[in-house]
Image (cartoon, rainbow, N blue to C red):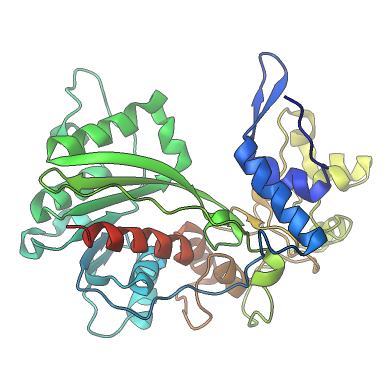
Amino acid sequence: MKLSIQKTKEDLDLMSNSIKNCNEKNLSLFNFSEIDKINNKNNDNDNNNNKYPLSNYKVLKSPIKTKYNVIELFAGAGGTSLGFENAGLNHVLLNEIDKSAVETLRNNFPKNTNIIHDDVAKIDFEQYRGADVVQAGFPCQAFSYAGKSLGFEDTRGTLFFEFARCVKEVKPKIAIGENVRGLLRHDDGKTLKTMIGVLEEIGYNVEYKVLKAQYLDVPQKRERLIILAIRKDLKIPFIFPREQNYIITVGEALKNCPESIGQKYPKRKSEILDLVPEGGYWRNLPYEIQKEYMLASFYQGGGKTGIARRLARSEPSLTLTCSPSQKQTERCHPTETRPLNVREYARIQTFPDDWQFYGSMTSQYKQIGNAVPVNLAYHIGKCVIEMLNKI
């Protein structure tokens, strides 16, 4: 099959999530549906035919509130919580153990919001039985499989166990687990298999899907694995968000962004990154400076495309991490030689400008980088509402 597409630099960067290398045969495999979206998007920019329009950046919010209640564990800075609230859901409990993240939650949600600052293992969830939804972005911890039956008790000591315990005690209609895409292959897939088996054991049917935030009103190439569990006595369909036919760019997201605190580069690093063009990375540097900046990494394999990376205004951002100036995952401003600042980080994660973060600057970056993008959570929340409305 012949591939007909003009491969500009922007095209190739946007296709980066759609290309898989097959090292055995030295081939590249393309997801043609992804390439079609990118091609149509670029045609729209050239021809202004509005088939795949670029959307203006905004934080999505429904004017309608539902009656459905949610319990959220590991709430962090509130990305999922706010997205669900914006979709029309209501929280009866938010749990978080990090002090600074709890301060962020308490200073942004209404004063009467039930926010518990404690170890999740110490919470008795029986009192919340009847809540419609339990949601958790639990950290992925390794399980021990030797001599185990891979059941509910086998996960004890992991944070997934606390999520499963909450689901078992509350018996919600729907349970939602969120994690990184890497969970699919963690321990050769055994970890995810165990999680699904546990949820089935305690009375739920389970499906999962990787969602791409860049097609769900988020100006960022970020993928999240969403695990949906529906109580077995309920005959309702699994509904996942449908990808939109447009993207939002960094340039759109950063328009009129408020000033804020942010990290700074050392003098020499700033001089080197000054040489990187918009959308470029370490390979755009002069050869001798590549070696100076990369050190031992210069002689190692792999693309290392995050090193000395400057974002481009015409594309979604690369995935934000817990710091914009880590060497392996650089997130330099598109037109200024500096790391993205805190409010720019928040914009790319689709937090509203009035959502204030607390704690040290390092903690604020970490809270934002670890969050589920608010608009991605909004789309998930709208699907949850649609599912609950079918009961």
